[in-house]
Length: 127
Image (cartoon, rainbow, N blue to C red; front, side):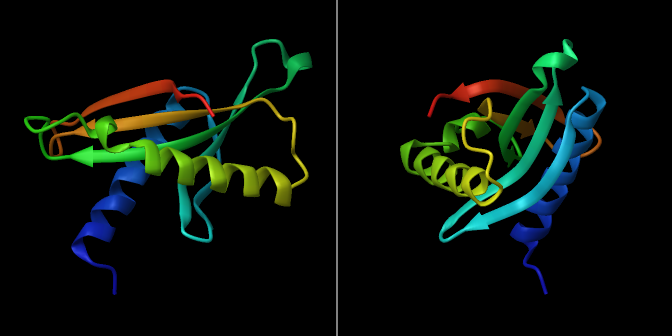
């Protein structure tokens, strides 16, 4: 049985997925794991020029009750970024997608329903 923390994490990922889909993203995978690393969401954003294809987006979701202590995205520290990059490299290798344009985004959620503030930080960090 999932813990309360896990339940909130799944709920946050669901909220983030819906938010991204409304913006035109296609969710490819949730909770991709490689060794100790995990990517919350892997999405595809089609390019407006379809001949270019689009971008593969690795998304970390962070949800906090309030931002009094620190913004949720502040939790994506150096160690977390290293693990996200490791998982992304494994995903690209497993699917023979090396060389695919990709980026790392963070979806920051603050508050409790129904008063949520959602911020999508595109290219939150560079690998």
